[in-house]
Amino acid sequence: MKIIMLGAPGAGKGTQAKRISDKYEIPHISTGDIFRANIKNGTDLGKKAKEYMDQGLLVPDELVVDLVVDRVQKEDCMKGYVLDGFPRTIPQAQALTKALESLSTAIDYVIDVDVPDEEIVSRMAGRRACLSCGATYHTDYMPSAKGEICDRCDDKLVLREDDKPETVKKRLDVYHEQTQPLIDYYSKMGVLKTVDGTKIMEDVFEDIINILGA
Ligand code: AP5
Image (cartoon, rainbow, N blue to C red; front, side, top):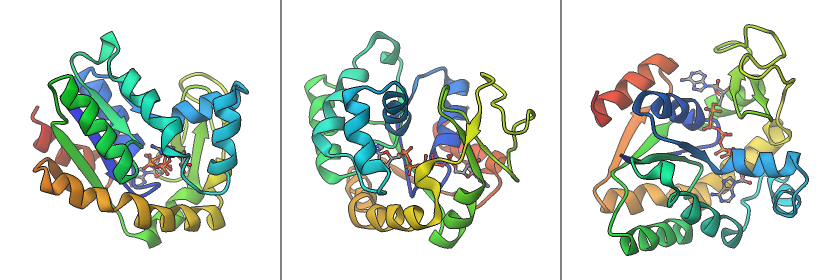
């Protein structure tokens, strides 16, 4: 099962993608996590990506497309995968469609997690992230049992640089301009499903399972 998670920054794509990955035993591929791991490790890719991410801008398509196209061809993706944060622009979506066509395959479901902008800004202020293992928490809705320490790997949790309110507003503008057109793109391909992302996390997941099948 090949799935794309769509939605504004902070809509809950990562939260739901992790649950899908656990339930259906397919890899969760988050381009944001890949970039953050590269930043943490001080790689060239990380240095380039950081310039854009800290400003709330998208990393250029050429830095992300090959990375994902290579990743989805790895052995562990043969049963499927859930893409989180990719594609984010029409050229990225077209490149993915073309690459999959050349492998005689296609995306099965695109799940748009729909949340209004006002709720996003308040959600992001409460998010805490583990830059080591990619786990995310929320101070009110999903706190770590260990306070400011990651439950999974014991590293320190942080407020992401790009989760500060002024950067979140910029990311929302970028989302509406460059990513929202993908809703139309995938709707025309007949694979788009929308879920109400304002519900509690468990109910959003139940709606997704109803789409994907138990
Ligand atoms: P990325 O990490 O992908 O950020 P994003 O898309 O902006 O998404 P987020 O991770 O911020 O949010 P999410 O939807 O996963 O929400 P979450 O589940 O954490 O990308 C970061 C940056 O990298 C980009 O800005 C860009 O610069 C670059 N980049 C990445 N991919 C790229 C690409 N393909 N091309 C170019 N550049 C790229 O939830 C948010 C919070 O809300 C959490 O605290 C969570 O606990 C809470 N929450 C979740 N669901 C609920 C709920 N139902 N109710 C209450 N709280 C909830």
